[in-house]
Length: 640
Ligand SMILES: Nc1ncnc2c1ncn2[C@@H]1O[C@H](COP(=O)(O)OP(=O)(O)OP(=O)(O)O)[C@@H](O)[C@H]1O
Ligand SMILES: [Mg+2]
Image (cartoon, rainbow, N blue to C red; front, top):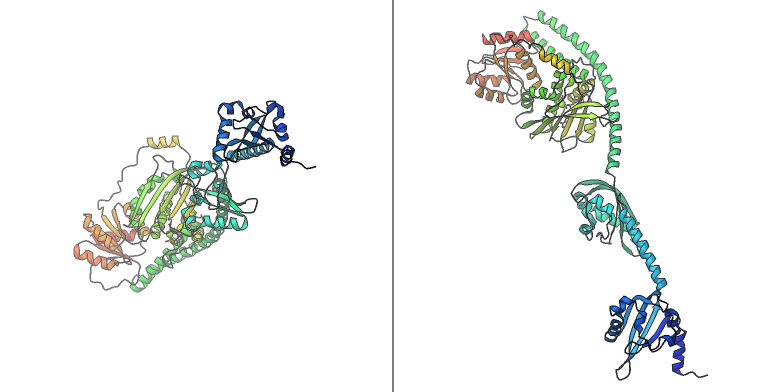
């Protein structure tokens, strides 16, 4: 049977049940209807033909003029394509994909519109579900506060941002989206192309994982664990990166504290072992030296009329005494020293020797002190602590060849939890810290600095017993010496000492005691003595002895400085000078003094055989080592 073309076409359109295909006349009245239309909209052809197509629209869309707008756009633009809610005959809604095409006849008159509508509800539901799950995922990612979760595009520009990222890095999404993720790196890492490296590794291997310092918006840094995952689309094309960053500063701190505590334990065990050895050796040595010194003293009376032998003897004694001084420091390190602990106000102690410290440090070094208004006493041997402080200040000075600043600070510390990084038991402590801005130490030097005889200052310059002594004193006093240092960043040496128990009554008692009679020991012939010695320890001892004898004393650590002092300080009765000093020897210095102040007596204190015998000026000799009696005699002689 031959079908007309129109009939065939009609059948075709009617057979399509998935699409509503129908015509509208130029006014929007339905003029044809297919089975797909009936199926999706629920009207039969009889019911709907001749009705306006706006009855398929939602009430609000009708009121908004959507149907007319659709026709107008189809007419003017040649086609109108949209999606939206439509209403079935029974009032239920469905999501429709709609195309409206205008139909023109040959002479260009509008004959109507072809309308194709598809029920997309199922697809829309799928999309809704997807949107919902994406939304949920977004809320989930947003809600993660402990991790910064965000995305980068292929160039490394931030393209999404969660609350964790904001919390950890400090930027809001508005501030950071579109910026390059290298913003979070330190300037050094940026200069080393770390961000690019991370992206490259992630692109090549799929993932990059590392720990490192990152920078927050406010410029502060945190230790971050970072993962950078490559993201590929369905076809395997690289479309960006997922970045997960966690702030693990606390964990790192805890790990480091553990490592430090272990290291401290190892160091203290090592020092303990070395200490026992040193203590044993020093003890025997000390006995030997005592024997040598007493024999030398006895020999002295046998050589009175042999000046050559006498001076050799003096040399031997000086050497033995120097040995004894070293042994003292070794004993101090081994905690075998006889200490006389008393209550000491550390601030007072530092103030008391601040002049000495400043003089030992030299003019290019400034010493500043930082003390709290109130600080508890410590229990320690005051003299030894002074010596320890002097050792630390000299080390600080030695590290600053160009000069600089030393800060001596005290602060109270409480250790509540063990293990503590110092290795000390829980309790209250006072920490006395000496900081410098010198060349600092590398890790190996720092580890060995307290070992006896460890020195980087060269043979004859450092004994390597300075810090050993400080360490021993701190330990023997129930505290610790803690050193912090890094190359180029200076050094801080902290002496931790246990706080003395509060003693309210006894201080009150002390306050009620009649005060000591004023120093009636000042002899009538009290002198002003200028002591010149490049070794601050000797100068300090001399000072102590002189003031104990009732004299006043001034100190200079070089001939040049002594001359300046003599110019500026007014009255001096007598000068005692060392012979071997850098820059100007004791003799050269004495010559300058005699030129300028011919009547000022000069005593040359020296144990060196190389002092020339035939110098022209009139000076007194005081052979080293000398005791109180010899000193007294020399002073009497010189000022007679
Ligand atoms: N403040 C500091 N700055 C840099 N390095 C230091 C500092 N203090 C100590 N050191 C290092 O530790 C080493 C040991 O110091 P220690 O005081 O025990 O001996 P020394 O200073 O070398 O000798 P001495 O104390 O007899 O003059 C020093 O040689 C030096 O390398
Ligand atoms: Mg030293």
